[in-house]
Image (cartoon, rainbow, N blue to C red):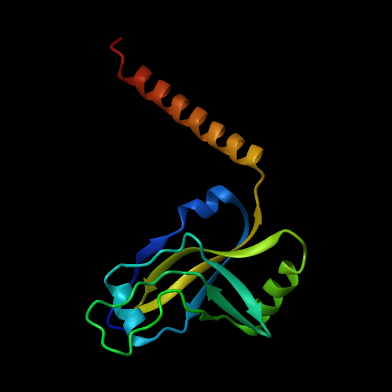
Length: 158
C-alpha cells in the first residue's frame, strides 16, 4: 500500500492548450533519480518548453526543467536531462504510429503525484495556426462576457 493517496499537481503546461489542438492524452510514469524526486516534492518543475521524442522503441521526455535539489551533493541531476517515459508497448506503438503523420507532436500537459508516484500527462497534439489561437481567445472572451451579463441580470433588483 502506498503511504500517499490521491493526486496532487506539481506543474501544469497551460501554454500547451493554447498552442496545440489536443487530440489524445496518456498518463505515463517517469524514470527519475533521487534528487529529481526531492526537487519535485518541493513543487519545482517547468513543462513549458517540454516535448517527447522516440529513440528506438522508447519514448523520452526532453527539455523539461527540474531544477537541482538545493540540499543535494555532488551527485545532483542535470536540470534538463532526457527522462525515460514509462508506457505499455501497445500505447507506445499507437503513439509512434500517430506521430509519423505530419504535424503531430507529443507535449506534456501536467506533472503530478498519484499515490506517491510521479506521473506525467502527455498529449498527442497538432500545432494551431495563429488565427486559430486568436479565434479561441475571442470565444473565451465572449463566453466570459455572456456569463458576466447573466450574473449581472440575476443581481439586478426587480
